[in-house]
Length: 479
Image (cartoon, rainbow, N blue to C red; front, top):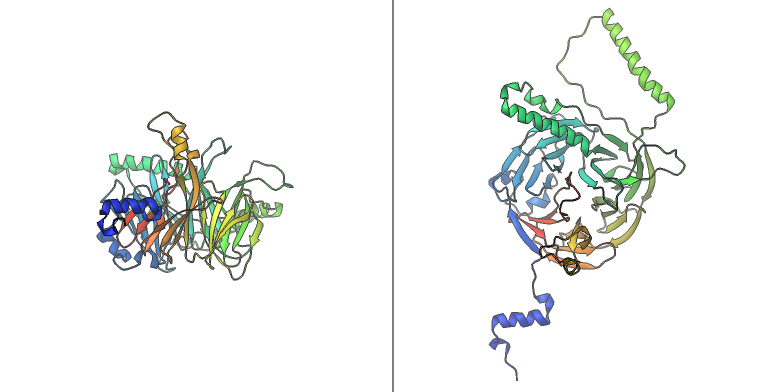
């Protein structure tokens, strides 16, 4: 008879189990990067079980060095990677108490030279704050609650003839688009003035309460995408060609995808041209001029009214043209959340029946379906699957993996199962299953704008925030 299991040493026993039962040999699927535990999190309910995921008003936005959390009327910026101990509280002072205005969306906008925090409110305002908590700009986008702010773009390379970088704002039945270059120019002016004020504090004559309105408003476009009902989420997925029977012009067309309760998925062609009729163009010029003339004449006849300090209510911009392309209706299924791939060619849609649909945004067809994932959250990431091939193809010892060495994957967080699954796109199998603690949340650093193509490629990562312990871990991208 062979030796009993009790007589085998523990290290040898573990090696034997790992050899014959590879699944039992545990491999590190995550790496702890930092911790956000601090007293300031008490305002957000930290310390209670499930505080990070059970509060619908709690919003998170992640950067490579900072984490921003918002709870209705307060924002907390915490340093977690290389900026430990950094804490800034932001309390927007001009939220309307009459309209019960609150913070409804949050996202980082990162350029090479600076980073800012984009804040959306329930009344349709876009606020831009510096990482130090200074208000840079406040602008009305459209009356209504801002559901989501997305930072999306692609660089100019061999696969893309043109590059685009944009910020999109999703609202119920409405989507807006802002060129990232316009925001960058505004931020450049603000930071230059900030440096000048730092050198000469007496040169700053602006009112602190009106500092967000001192700059020119950002140019943007807004479209009505409520053809198939109010949407729960929306995104601009990229540039698309114009209709076949339409005259060619220099105007660009964009494709927008929406999800909602009436139509699970719907798509629209967005035009930069507002396409107003001749009569509408004439009226838009004549009516304001006529009204201004009548108002001026009436002041001569009647007594001039005293000026009031009350600011007029901000109004949204006129809608540009949005043409419906297709929609998917499958009652009682309702679309809930939308996640875009880096290039925008794929979108993951979660619905109310626990299904995840993978949408090809160019062909506008569903190419894959997962079932049994209620309350799931999805994020795209990149895994290094060609590591051996890449290393052998380069003689250098310190080889930096290129973009072609990575494979696009979808990370699915199923909180009811307590796991995170990683699936290879588009039709690949499940690569990993990672156990995660209750009360955890998937996060992803915001895209970085302005970096050159020659710079080393930064793969798309997904991080896991444990609300109970405060630890932030990255999902390892090497198989």
